[in-house]
Image (cartoon, rainbow, N blue to C red):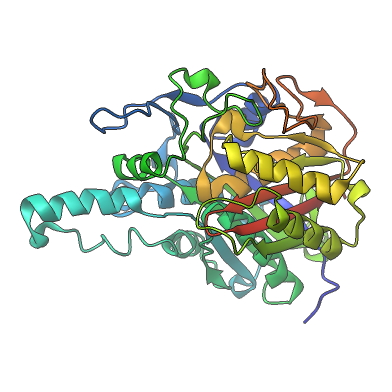
Length: 409
């Protein structure tokens, strides 16, 4: 083990409902522009008619037509954002041993789109019509596998599957792979494409989704009228790199990843405990990993899904950890919706850009605050503030919790 190895971010890529590039998505985020839109769910009598859909992505930039037919859409999103992140980092222009570059990529539900399509083919046309690429084109670890194949990355290749914590876990474990000396560079993030009829129907019957008719006011974390999250699609990628390795090749450095914490609620399949003790434990673990005090944090990009129980639990967790020195807080899910296993990666991007530009993105649609959620969540309008250290929270079904801490270098 080589735990003195520091980890920095040298590349970013993003595919999201608010933009398919870093500049486009960050401009929308800091200006409070929603990416939620009316969506034909394909479900008869569906009470849900909104989602966060990726728009105008040119898949031909990243994959040929044969690859597009073979791979589930979530894998294509992963390839797109990772290619942009790799190009942004510039490491593919350097003579680096490919066995020192790895991938750890997460997803919550993976290839549900491809599963749905092939299930219908099986039922209507028989097994002989099933694509031989159905299984490899659907499994979650093919996101990591195909990124490795496309870019000749021969180091560690794995995928993390922890529901809505998946991307945060992938990023945190990638950092540890570098710290332990298993790699010098890791491509990390998450991807999701769950806005299919089956995906939406499952979340409807779980009573998890917003039933709002107005897409511009559907995702409203901490508002008294919040009624569930908006299901969204997307992907984001960070290139993580050992600090001296990055400096030696003259890489642009966005930020340093200095803390990672995990915990489990051990409570319920889908609901957190109201006191948020598991979420609090993950935040404390991240602070301890970074050797920080709670009052060192300038900003929290909250999980903030717009669910009644989740928002309250996170509020109580933040109060427990930070006491009377609450940092600035916002939920960028108010604009992107909830991208499930990709959420932590999207929100890591926005956290890093908050560091870079010293702008706290807003929580839009927060017009009638819940009296029980009584912190300052940066309602509706972004704020300029000098920011040095930020925390990104992601919590998922099964009670899995994760927190990351980034710092300006």
